[in-house]
Length: 221
Image 1: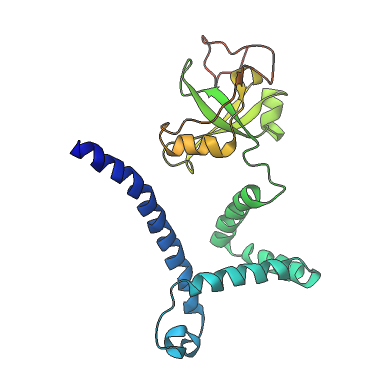
Image 2: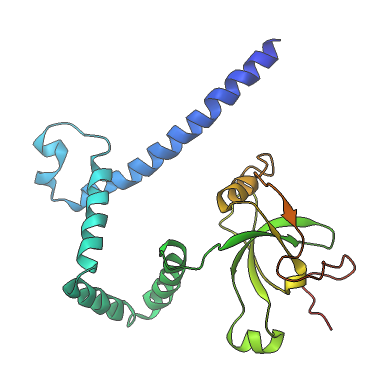
């Protein structure tokens, strides 16, 4: 009985404690933006004490101001000039361009990241997992594979920021009515939090069901 009550209390306080710890880490990191102010302008010098979270408000204000300025003609020209300047620095150029492509894809309203959730056979036949459709092969890859192939991202658990990018034929993909948020929770929780699927329809992208005798990464002959 003692163990039962202890586990129940732990299940209540553990998520709250981890949430507060993450928020404290994020706010503490954003508070470092106060270091950009001259020492006489910082709250410690003006008020004599530190105000937690003031740096986070300053960071949000800077982000909003940057977004407003980037929306007008002058801001766009300054942004273009800034990107050209970074593009001339050898090491910074490769890092900045790669990060910018990922952030534009993930954060832009017009981005194509995580279009929908699908079921794929991975890492072996008859072993299924939830994946995210991110697009279709293009260019030289599409010329080799042909039309109709799908590019999916299979995240690793419990860290969905790392994973595998697979190019599969439609016959190796099954559509499933699971939201992107539910699929992410499923991977982060190591499969403990079940996705709220209503129904599963095999092979929505094509009428042919996936074969269990062929590997999903092997192109059909």
